[in-house]
Length: 204
Image (tube, rainbow, N blue to C red; front, side, top):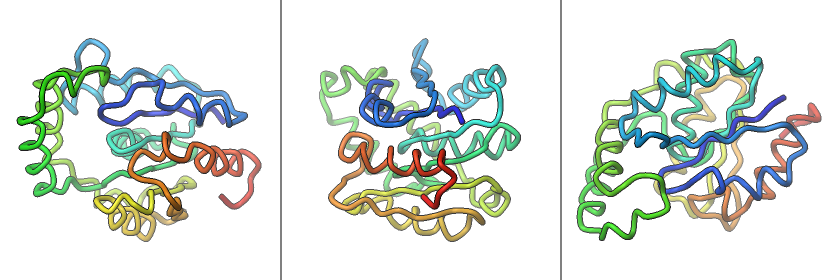
């Protein structure tokens, strides 16, 4: 099954390089912020178009923002989603944390955003456009096999990971030892092992 890797905010497709090299499946890793997309509706719309050209089923594997997009895509196009790998993501945006993040972003220098695909202004616009996302009602309708991952040190997202794995019917929870939020950077072998197990039809 082809894997579509979706990177997080502040990352690029290259952030998945180590994971991709360790997996045996065909994969794609789109650049989410092409053409300066800084609105969630633009991002999800562009991905829907991209997926329409791909042969189903697909494994949607996303980190953080990528995990939100992967889950949303699976709800919008369930016929495309053969499997999900959701890493360090949320299903309902925590407004308090987003507000803190917004304040932090505004005080960070512009150079801190270089290399992430979006400028400081665009990053703030994107996070603000995500405030009303709530995919809670769709979780029980996800029928494809799902792996929910979270780094054991990712305190901001570990509760959501547990809740998602409990609400999605065919979900398995994996807490990745020693990893922070960016599991694709901290523990690429752990992600690859789960993906390869899925390809083998084994329990991830």
